[in-house]
Image (cartoon, rainbow, N blue to C red; front, side, top):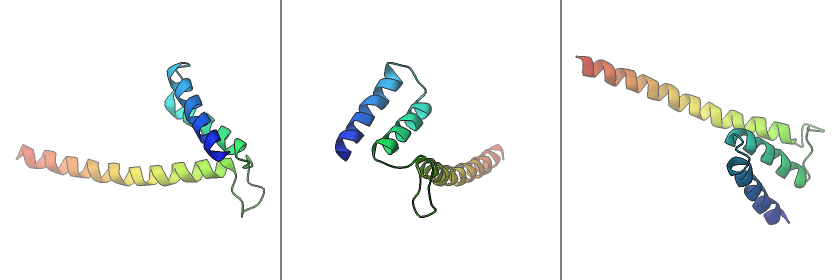
Length: 88
């Protein structure tokens, strides 16, 4: 049953992006919430032991953006250093 839900979610995601022309990030959030509900996850965590859909999305985005922030900051510093060396 889980595989069918994931395949349907991918099809819905592609349709939202291509046919409806929805922004991919917004479409991904909608589909993620839909998959969570279809798999039986609660929208909001009923207890600290069982995460809800919103907590799972926050944790996933936080981990990804935290990693990207480090990469972007280091890339910016490296770019400035290389620009400074090139000016000399």
